[in-house]
Length: 496
Image (cartoon, rainbow, N blue to C red; front, side, top):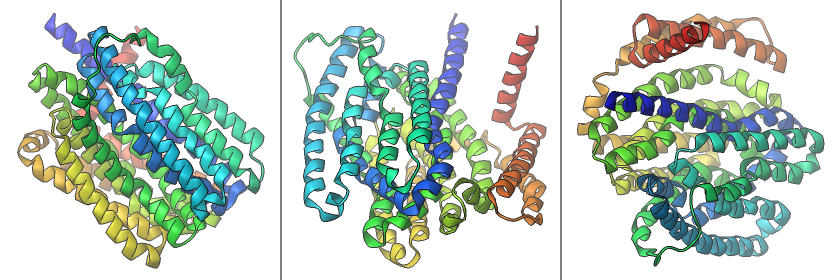
């Protein structure tokens, strides 16, 4: 019976990972599909306007969230088997969220009407500010804590598809950047309305006892501080570029970041799925299970992130030219600088969100992120005036190195055992063979038009990832072999 439950949990975890990968990727697939079109219609300046406003408002959305989007997952996962307790926890966190969201929205409104650079485009900033309201009513942390990834994924994909169609119908000229902003907010947040309507299936809003807001505040404050520090070095680059240089430079920077963002969401999807499961294991003192999934997660990230990082560094020019066009040539170097963060973020996400947070060591994550934020701020002040978008990318790369090193030092005794079963030489050999198999594609006598870059990406991608995967299978790399056997097993079942 215990073995049956273990298999059932494993299947559930794999399905949650697949669904969350789709969900996470969809958050960037919409802008990634739309970007080749929008970049040519709105140009670098128009794109820079929308991205700058979105990143600026992100600070206020972060304040409004108060760390609840992460803490809420952990809190809900612990009491998910008791509807009454779950309802009580959700009510307490939702009330806190309402109060802080109102304060944050008020502060944003004051800034929009008093800061000259914001007042110039107040409609755009007000549109982007709607994200605060949608985040509040969406309560996505409840669904993630309960591992309801199917519902989250399906409704999210529907709204993104509607927004994508709307973009091609309504965004036709440079002055349509406000319409693009509306559609971007709709794609990412309209499903929050369905979340609110559906939430009564899992909780009740009927008060069941006295509220104890204070018991949440200590943990919430730590997660909030983590969010503050993280957003400093993930969004500060754009804000500083906009103020120190111009919004066109923001457009160049965001073009280089687009590809990285979708790849990061795929790499970190496993960590998002594992947080509620890991919290549940720790709460029930199932430490062997906790260590098992932690080891698998680290192995998975190394196998997946390393080839994605290297491939898109080698073919950065083709990627940028295909997605954005020759106007975005200045995005190529920033993209090369920022690609190694795929590997760094993937590992720090597992160490932080799947190992430190479930075991109650959020403060260590906070300190590592603060160190990264300070590093990023200092390097931005030095390099942005000299290098522009490339300087911002360089600052982010070093900041992510600092975060990962900090966490590795703290967890050195625990992760030593987890890394024993990971054979890095197999991954390195796969990368070497993959690179050798496709590098000749760059030497083909072809130009850099969209069509030619697309052909290069298709040929090189098949060669690189095909050679890499075959190498890992031949050398019997553990996680690759598991995935391969699982896929083959399912195909045989269907055939039979």
